[in-house]
Image (tube, rainbow over all chains, first blue to last red; front, side, top):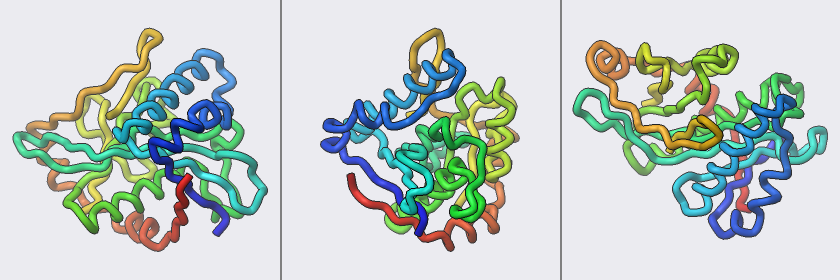
Length: 173
Length: 49
């Protein structure tokens, strides 16, 4: 296997918090970089008190160095009319700026973002083995302005839940 | 917990409440079989930090 995920417990985050942030490059655009760093810091902070589960992705072949990206997942729900439907929420999907928008032959020509999303799907099915869950959901930050981001999620099967263009979902069971 | 960044701050986003036609669409959404097949065939390795 050319890649490996690492899951972080609150105690491991307490020791590594700063290094988790410093291990990745943010956008070349300074204002975007500030936003990305703030959102990653928030996800790490939530992971440190078990409000989300943080994972990082690394290349085990050594071709790509360091942390390639992060994904954070939590248990959630969607109110559909008056029915609560259980969901897995993608709290954060972050790709190291060095590795964005590129496909890698040794990763079966996938992008890092695609691997992270597929991993979220795999975790969804692990959860479903034990508890009921129907949807994988996410809130694409600045989705209205960032057409490329939304196009990417749509290419992975996500659909906007409403015309307000806020939450996106995939029904997975 | 989903977040957005606004006016220099990270803000928690309230969870979705879907109604009407959107609700019907979401309840009747099809499961993307190709994607599911791809996800389930991939062998992810996870280690603890």
